[in-house]
Amino acid sequence: MRLLVKAWQRYVKDDRFFSPSGLLLRAAAIAAAFLICHALSLRQYTTIASGTAPAAFGGQSVGAVLGILYIASYFGFVLLAPVLVLAAGLLALYHSLLLPKVRPSDASAHPPAA
Amino acid sequence: MLGCRRLVEDKTDYRPLLTERINLMVERMKKSPVLSAESYPNECWTFCNTVALAAMRVADYLDGTDHSEFLRNWVTIAKAKLTDPKSGLLISTYTVAGRPIYGPEGSTIWMAAHCLQVVDEDFAADQYARAKRELGREFLGFGDAWEWPASWTGSPDVDSGPVVPILGISAGASGLAFLGASSFKDDAYLSSLLASIEFAGFPANENGRLKYCASNQVGDAVLLYAAVQGPVWDRVRPRTRQ
Image 1: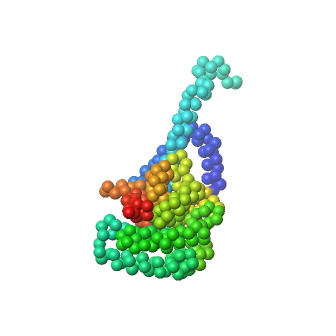
Image 2: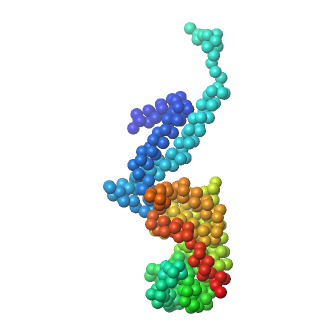
Image 3: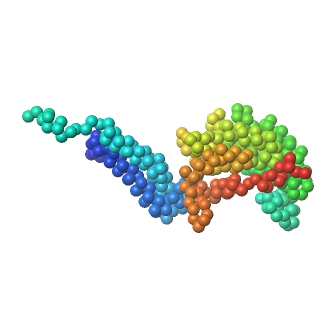
């Protein structure tokens, strides 16, 4: 468990976590999760939202879990993924327009101290 | 159901069946000081009793009977004894003697207001306006309904369906709000409810048939009724009767 926490902390501190590609990767993962749930026709189990126990091959509790899984992936896809994509776009724009660019001549003018 | 079926196309076999049921309802309701019959032992539901009142009005229209005095008395008693003093909404459940059990509920009031339209249009419109104010919500084009007004604390049951924590959204109340908005031609609220169900009701088109996967059979029936209701009520409203 401690290893997992440390790995997560390293990942968060990594520059790639809040990079445009990192954000896009997470949006793509959410979209993929939703598409898999949708392709598996898990939408039919969302009747759990109205308090009705869905019938599933493994019993009602399995149906309920599948329904909740679909609902979570759907709202992730329609609410969270677009935000991540927009954030990635804005971040990419910020990087390309506003961050000072290091020119090769600048780098050679100030060589690192020996 | 019998009365509405006869309004669409009358069938003589159904007339005695309707009369028998109406007489039975009136007889049982008159035994209570608040003119209400039990849905469960010593538990009268406004939902059931307002449906009975609407059935009487339909029978009056079809068969020339006259329950207008009974209907007037019910409304008078309801205003005096069956309304929540804080919100002015009809309470949902009470004993045969008229002692409140549960307060106003979204899963009851929208249907009750719809049924009361053919009993006392002004009272019905007032109940709808109060329900909309106390329970209805619209935000960024999406609409929903609470099960309980802010002044009342209740707990989810089989009628309310699950209530979304913090947001307070009730599947039962929001579904029946369709009927209220449709009955009172509240197009803005109806559109917002429709936006919500299209967004979060998980619609599915199968073989040309629309189904909301998050709903159930009762929910589907309510939505269908909300979509088609109107012509029958227009015929039996007291003011349109010649």
